[in-house]
Length: 102
Image (cartoon, rainbow, N blue to C red; front, side, top):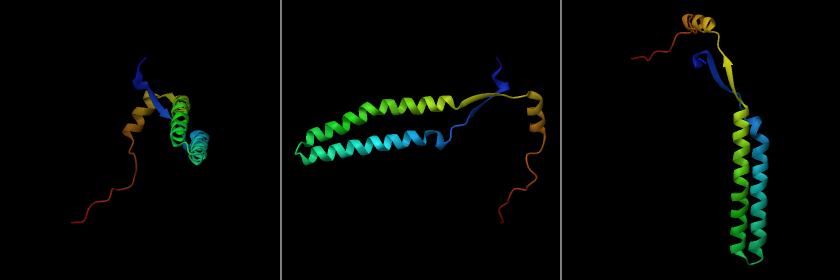
């Protein structure tokens, strides 16, 4: 398989992971709310342990969701060598570049 005839395209947008970000923010707010509740009950060690436990247990799931979403949006597109040769020989744009005055 000749990889020069393929192009790797990533079609991931923020909208694809927006729901995951909202869920992650919800998890953080719930953990902070539980920590504040335990702080009020004069148990600061339990409050810190609760926040740490929630974050440590939820982080692998968040990373798995992000990585699988990213992998699902990576595509290999076949490139026609004839079209690629024509596009390289054609001028890219007709605009002139700006030059510094001096």
